[in-house]
Amino acid sequence: MGLEFWGKDLEQLFENAARGLLAVYGNVSVSSNEKKVVLLKSGDPESLMVSWLNEIIYLVSAQSWIPSQGKILSADTQTLKAEMYGGKIPGGVHLAREVKAATYHGLKIERDGHRLKAKVIFDV
Image 1 (tube, helix red, strand yellow):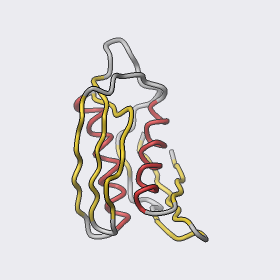
Image 2 (image 1 turned 180 degrees about the vertical axis):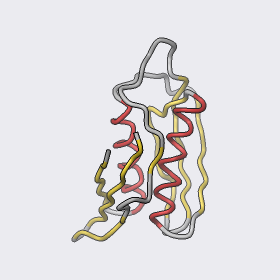
Image 3 (image 1 turned 120 degrees about the horizontal axis):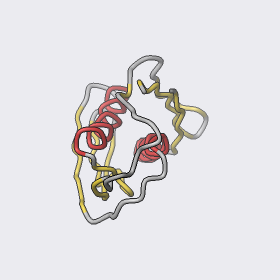
Image 4 (image 1 turned 120 degrees about the vertical axis):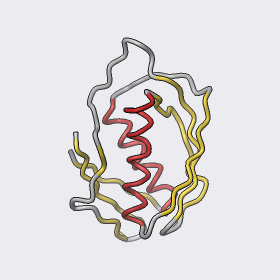
């Protein structure tokens, strides 16, 4: 499954990527009483994007925790700091799809006029 995201800067691009990924899981309602801070470093923006999305996938699949809201506090071409609020996926709630990983296949982040654009393929 492939998704395309846009943002006026890296912070917005990464936030929109997270929103797109969460939409793949479906409309899951959880309380926002737990906070998680994510700090990531990588060699380039594309690797950082994969790390960011795979961090969310890990939280959902391994910890049954899903963010309901979040904010990228800072992002540059090699580092990202984010805050996410969410909670455990309630028992009996099933996700619309299982996402295994964000991949590097066809991944690119590029400038498109006055905004950034990214395409990501997910292994589902």
